Length: 300
Image 1 (cartoon, rainbow, N blue to C red):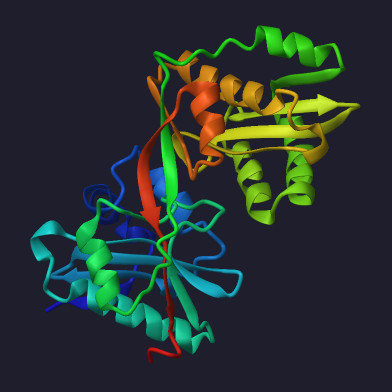
Image 2: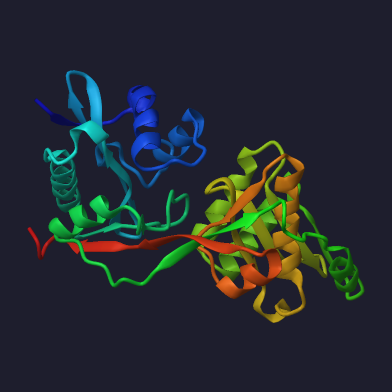
């Protein structure tokens, strides 16, 4: 008999291989999964659900609460146990728990900071069909990832860096002492989610973060690895400093640092504008996603 239970950290040893088999084939280790699930302050343990049978994990649904509404970060069922009502039971339990907390909206999508995927990949037909059957809706607006072949990309930035230096703009790799100022800039100019992702670069021995400085102030930034290994983003430049090459240099510096550690491909997560990444790094669209939403009150 399958039971729905809360997942604490003791289930990590079973959860990791099941996640890798069903929902996340990118590089992921136990420490990273623990950090992004159990150490996420927006993910109460009662929203981290597993389907158990004879002490074996056969399915899971991991959710959090962002800005007042529920978000499913990852879900999956063991391939040999699909079409047996396990995912339906997990979602039903999750929806009841959210309603008990006064949360009326649930989405299945990427929702920064710290998302796994931007949405439900369009190649995952069974997952999409399941969500439609459960009453979830999508506006069919597509989010995309792009992939860069680092063996072919032209990443030299010397000429543009010299041009920027001539107007006193310095672009360099950040050190830990730069992170606070960069996070503050990101919050002021972009979003709290990006601020959190910039702060995540503290977890790494060498911060995966590059910055642009003008007049002693951060005016641009680019991070990588914070939403997944060899995954570029977030990135942004102060609006009045755009169109002078800062964004392109920041991108290429991040990609070159991936090359230097031996990577052969990089992913531009939740990419846009597409034309910028295609021009600057030869990036190509590699994945496409839809986002799904449900009003729990209307469907209760």
